[in-house]
Amino acid sequence: MKYINCIIVFFFAIHTNLSAQQAGTWYAFGNPEDEELIGFKDKDGEIRILPKFIGLMEGRKFDDILAAIEMTDSGLLTYYLTKPGRVIGRDSLFFFDNMPDCENEGFIRFHDKQTDQIGMFNRNGDIVIPASYNALARVMNGLVAGLKNAEKQSWHGHDHDEHAGCNHYSWAGGQSVLLDTANRVLIEEFNYEGTIDYYSLRITDAPIEDSRRLNFKSVDDTYYSFVHFEKEFLIWLNEMVLTDISEEKLLAASYDSITWTPSSSWEAESKYDFIKRNFNILRDRLLLMKQPEFDYYIISGGLNQFIFESDEFKRYYNNCGDPKDWQYPVISLILNHRDDNRLTQDHLDFLRTNKGYRLLSVSLRSGYLQ
Image (tube, rainbow, N blue to C red; front, side, top):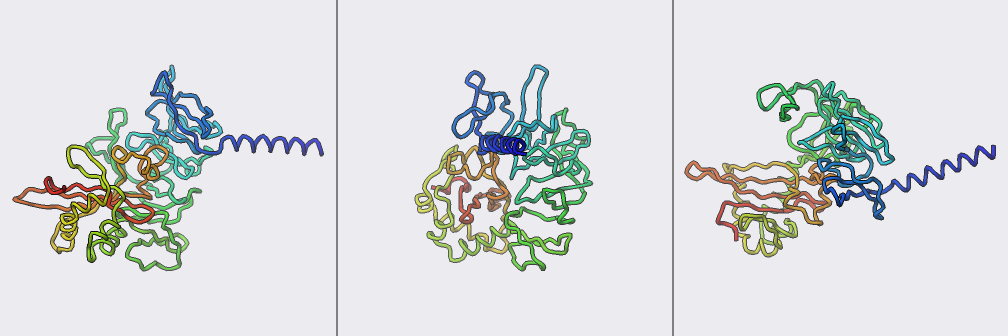
């Protein structure tokens, strides 16, 4: 028995040491001889994976599981790689907008090409949601939105064909559901327009009376309530900015720097300087929303990584450099002007931060901003 106990202790010590070595984020680095190949180092600079992944792979930080792409002598090799080195899901990468998926909360989507269905791996490389869905959203707050029994419709008016270069399509019909990461259906009819904050979830016995929230009845007769980003934004804008609008209010509702286009390119400057020069025109534009017949709309999107690329914005992107619009959306307020049958638009973009929405960038009809 003593001998067995020693073996157990020795195995536990090795396992603990390996886990400690794998813990923490690994960071991508390039091959000096071939900058298109990347590998990964740990925070101390020790090489964990030699450069072998091609540049199409967008993962620049490695936490738990990674979509990997290699060019070998026999052709392109695609698979998923876990931190301990487990290779799974060969030739089943899930692509969105022509880029492979990025893990979120330790989960990553995969695509079964034979059935054209989507599933989910966990950080250990185990299938936690089988490939039985037409579409799956990334994991957000331990929740997954899924679509079943829908019909794929090509935007180009013919059958979807990835090999012909056509990957633009949408889904028609089907059933939208809300799942957890164990593939349990929580809500059978999960339909809504716009975007919601999954991290604002509240579960109650009755619907929550809050104009910012959407309520969904679950399979166990409770109610799941989420903040609706667009509703939240309009309430915030009216209460915090448009009511008795002043320069001080607009400054408080602005990001530290405002990005705008004084010439042909975007430039950022202190909000104090920008708003001091342009407060009157910004106030007049915003107050147009109070006119009953004025035409405006809002859309939700993500931060533009090609414009907002400084270190201060890193928190708003995931490991692959994608904007985290599921937590930090950019709400674009678009004001329409029709002069002599000519449509022009003003764009005011607001970033949702941990301190609330903040005016981030402005683009008005030419000649107005200073």
